[in-house]
Length: 387
Image (cartoon, rainbow, N blue to C red; front, side, top):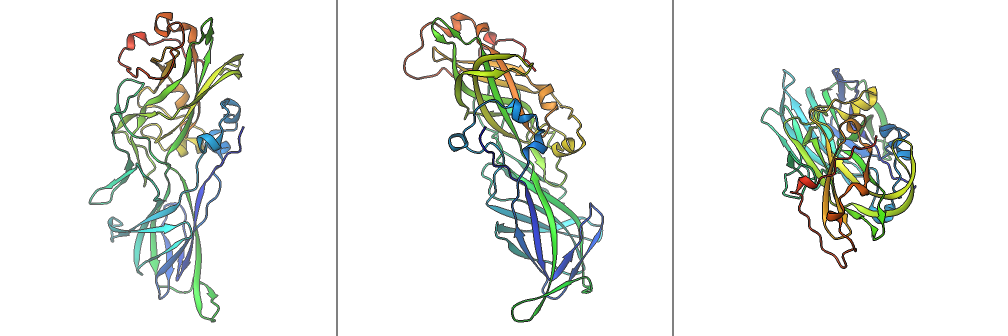
């Protein structure tokens, strides 16, 4: 197993001229002197996948993932942070907001005394994510665009995978003029300045699923019946998230496809999900998602409760056959996803001997070329997934 890069992002805000005290959603004071500025220092720490996914993920995951070839398996450090600073009215409603972008070295934002603020922090180095809000700033949604890519599962609109997104939301922060609570420091010239630290932990909004396809009974007199994987789709997933509440979207139930599947590793010693030891072939893909609709995935992990899917969740696999055709199969993975609301390992077992010989063909097809049609669902293999 390769060494994993795992990141969690607490944001430490070192504040010049103010004090911020945070505790849940209770109203706390910010103490502001003359300058009214915040110096923000961004620090990056590790996300522990063992805590997020459970210790068992390392034994479940059997594909030999080479990060130098396939990229990182876990979360990576973002290159910048954005802050949306919301000014609240007397009724504590968000009336407007300003946006500031920080590098990982930090930045500065100004606040006004005798005002109350909400603050949303998230990484700003995303490519595919779209952000939206309304005039009342009641929500701040993140989603992706729909696309016309081939999906290996039926039903639901097809959307792009999200980028990795981290964030946190702080509510009801009041700025007062009282200077008594400042911790006074002095610069090199002997001039006083006032400092207070805020730890805001930026945690993932996007969930990583490691999908591995184990192929058994794959060899016959003509060689391997299945030679690779064209793509893996997952449907029944949420199409976005609200950055304020961390609740995933229920209005868009979508399909996400990962076309960058990794090569088949042949004749491996494998342990099937039911504990059976066998020799078989294995393929894999890393898929970024928003998770199941209508949940806060991290809250489910924290309470060790299973999420209840709004709809069945299916995985579709575009298997490359030795004759060059792409043969699509579909599996119900609802129970697996329910037990892994914040991501983890999804294992699907395919018995190659169940695919009809007339579809696979005899001799391997020389050269390349694929028939990517997934419309002929009459040829779908209905073997049960082994859990």
